[in-house]
Amino acid sequence: MAKSVLSADRFHNEEAAFEYVEAQLWPNGPVCPHCENSDAAKIGRLQGKTTRVGLRKCYACRKPFTVRIGTIFEDSHLPLRLWLQAIHLLCSSKKGISTRQLQRTLGCGMKTAWHLGHRVRFAMAPGGSIGPLGGAGKVVEADETELARSRKTRRPADFRRKTHNPIVLSLVERGGDIRSTMLDHRSAMGVVRANVHPESNLMTDTATRYKYAPVARHDMVDHSKGEYVRYEYPITGEPELMISTNTLEGFFSVLKRGLVGIYQRVSTKHLDRYLAEFDFRQNTREALEINDEQRADLALKGFPGKRLTYQTTHSETEA
Ligand SMILES: [Zn+2]
Image (cartoon, rainbow, N blue to C red):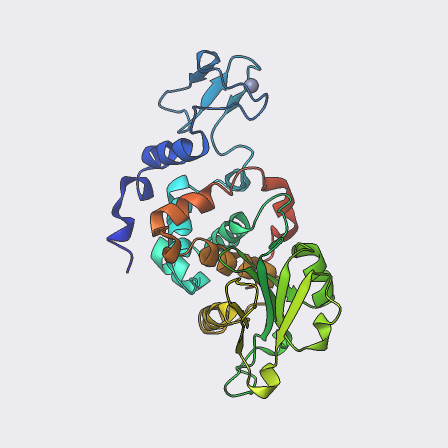
């Protein structure tokens, strides 16, 4: 399937893969991960028949390093070209790519495919402390979807028993980013409080879970009565205000077709990472003039600095 897309050198040649990753992660030249030395005069390249690709030596701290150190890449010895293929496939598949499909396309084992997929998802998750969505004069829509149920049929889809029916709460700043969270022990209000700027205009349906939301203004549409959009025309000359959570409808549709159709056996334990994957693609979608290659570069930039926190899921092999 991806033969023509994956024909670039970096997907097949390890030297080219290193060159590509180095250019992305070291835009100003190599940086020693041990002492942060970036003085080109004090960094040498180690080359020889038995030397690993991309190996360098820092003359400030005397230690060797490669671009993999201090990143998610450090966790495994898989070739970088395989990583680049996995990143590319996950970034260019609108509804995600199953472990089996990844395994077939990459020609690797199931376990390797699983690990690659989950690490790429992990890189796609926002790192560090991210600021709240919204702000003064900005609209944030909030809505939930039941993954094992469709709004049309109202019948649970054929989900595995252990998966029950997870509820996902998504928040989107109109014209901005989307953020999705699985609601289990987390309350909707807790998620709103942690992720929405208090001066925002929040838009939800009439569900009581949003009552007394800590925001400057809260508008509701009554989904139970079939109301999905309503317009308000202020008399002060301001633009009309569209009250709806419709931005999330299209996203939920892709999310459910992906999680139910492609991934099928997503356990709630890993759901947050799948949500990070769908959020990431939505936030870097084509409508924002970001193409597949640029999206993959953005995912690649999420690899540094995340290694240590990944350990918790290191040896799990279920979907
Ligand atoms: Zn150093």
